[in-house]
Every structure is written in C-alpha cells, then in structure tokens.
Length: 476
Image 1: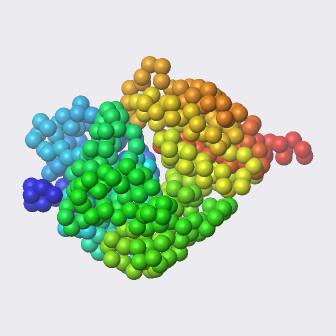
Image 2: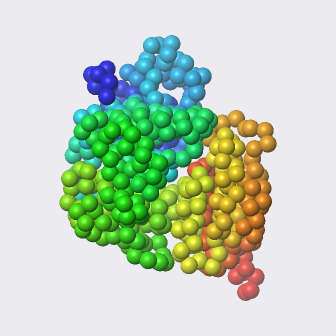
Image 3: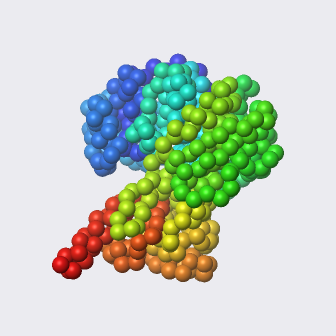
C-alpha cells in the first residue's frame, strides 16, 4: 500500500460507469462508510436502481457538466471508460484525480485483513463462498464482488469485522493496486490478450500480484494447476495449495458420481482430518474446488475448520453462475456467466451430470478480441450439448473486428463435429422462436455468456408459455 493512498481522505467521489457489476458494489460500500457518492452510466439497470434506492444520485448519460455539478474529490472509472469520455476530460481539466476502480478498492481495504481472489475463472463464485463463510462464522466481513451473492441480494456490503473479501480483476493489471493479506489464485490461462499480448506477460503480472501478500501473508493457489503453484512458490511467499490431487495441502474428496445440483464432499485438511461440505447451488467439480479454496482460506485465517465447513455449507450461490431462471412445459432454464472455453466446458460438464434428456445451449461470445484470440478453443468447448445456438458477439464497448462474429464460433464447433445441431442465429426474435420449436420436455436450456444473453431465458419462458396456451386453446 503506497503511503500516499494510506494518507488520503476521500469525502466525495463520482463513479463513471457506476452501473457495472464491480463499480456499483464499490460505490455502495463507500457510500455506506459516509462518503458522498454520485455516479453516471449510459443506461438504467438493476445495479443503478439498487444504488438509487440506497440514496446515491445516478445520472443517465455522460456529460461534462455533471462533473461541474458535483465537484468530487476523486473520479473513479472502470476499464470500459475511455480517456475521451467527456466526464473524464472535464475532471482532468479541473485537476480532479482519476482513479481506476481497483485503486478505490484498495482504498476501501485500508487497515483490513484482505482476501483477494484472482484467476482466469472462478473468481466470483470463490469470493462469494469466502464472504458467505466468513459472515456465517460471525466475522462480519466487508465484501466487494463482481456479481450478486445469493442470500445477500447485493454485490457489495460494508461489514464491521475488520475483514475484506474482494474479487481481484486481472483483466488490465489493475489488481496490482490491491494490498492482500491472502491472495487466492484459482487458475492462470490465456485471456485478455488484447491487454497482455502473451500468456507469459499474464503470468508475470500474476506473480507481481501474489508477491503483494508480503512476508506475513499467504498465497492460496490451485495446486492441480502445477504451473500456477510453481509461479506462486517463485515469489518466496508462504504458499498453501488446494485441489483434487493428493499432494495438495487441502484435498477435495468427492463422494463418487452424483446427480442433481447439490454437491456433498469432504476436504482433507493439513492435520489429516476431514471436514464435510455441502454446496446447495453451483454444481460441478470446479465448484467443489472453489469451495476447497474457501476452506483453505479459513485455515490461513486460523478459523475452526469444522465450523468453517458448516458455515460454507450455508452458501446459497452466486447469481448468473448456473442460476435457475424457471421451468416451462417441462423445460428447465438456467443462466450462466461463463464465456471462456474452459469455463464453458466446466459448466456443461456439470450440467451433463444432472440427468436431463438433452442439453440445449444458447451461447453469446464476449468481446471481438476474445472471440478472435480463443476461436480454436471453442471447437470442443460445447461437446456436452445436444443443441447449440450461437448469438452475435456482445461487444462490451469494443469496435468490431472484420470477419469476427458469432458465426466464427459456430463454424469452429461445426468443424469439430461433436455437436449434432449447431446454428448461428444473430436475430433474437428468430432465436426465441427457434428455441420454442426445438425445446421439449426433459430438456435443460442453458443461456451462456457474460453479456445480455441473460435476457433470452425469460423471453423463451414467456414465448413458450404463450405457445402452450395457444395449443390448449386449439384443443378446446
């Protein structure tokens, strides 16, 4: 933690892009700590409405005059906000400091025992598990997470216990602003190559992040990813490993084949004893591993591990991580945020264990640059599904790349030859009509991706219900 940040006292802040999953939680916690908070966003959203309900003033649209009206001590921006944004330009003209989101996150963690969760996949679920576990242990943590934690109905909470749990975003390297006591690393893979260029650069940056724990801190790392563990040990910091391999410090012990969303398993801890965990939501081996990481964090904090396992078993899930949307005409609909090929394989692998007749997946690629860089990895990412429909790319603010679209992904999967029914359907109305025609009782429909594909599930349920009503009317 830099001395300048430790000595900073913020009484007012303005967030540009305040409606983002990460930004909204930071704004809420800062407001709950007595700071005057304002913000702006291009559109209304669930997060914006939550902030307004809490008493935070949010302006829809970005205008230079907004900065003149609020004159904050600091302006906070997300990675989606360009330097050309009129509010950024005006703040610079007025000499108002511009902080990236992670710098404000670091400011909020001052003087707290901070658990920062990083990794290409699993950050939101793992950090949600840790926050829930610590809260149920009576440790009253603050948390800031890039998704809504079920059971709290928020992505940000200001606790009084002196513990701080946060999701550490590696996408642009800004997680290096953090000052973790415990750094959790779930995995390190090639992603965000538009920023890093190479996997080697990503690994170097993760090493810098892990080194931030200092001499008295701990790195909790996925030991099944042996190279991740090697990178962690290269820092010279204290390292704890977790995973399924017997050589890990905390070993996940699945209880054999299972069906259904609930997972029951054990964790063998360093003393050699076993604690038992039940996860009622977010199925799959990858989420058993995430839960094992949470138990390892409890151990690093000196908590009673039997009590920690019981507390973790109260975890209700992370929203948009295999979230049950509804059921209609015998079709179960779930929504999942995963958009990287590794995440998709893990989610669909978990879905395949649930006993449905077929898996129908609607996938929305996220960002043109990621779709281009990872196109070959999508070839077999969907092998567990029976039907795949691919939407067009959710740009997340990027400019299109010629020749890159949802069709890029569909063509890769078709070339792979392991999914029988694959189509690229960029038109949403046509997509919903198509789903109504192909889905049948016993199917699991998964909407998959980090963008607004989440709207397809409810639209399908409404359309399918109308279709069923029309059939019923026709038989009368």
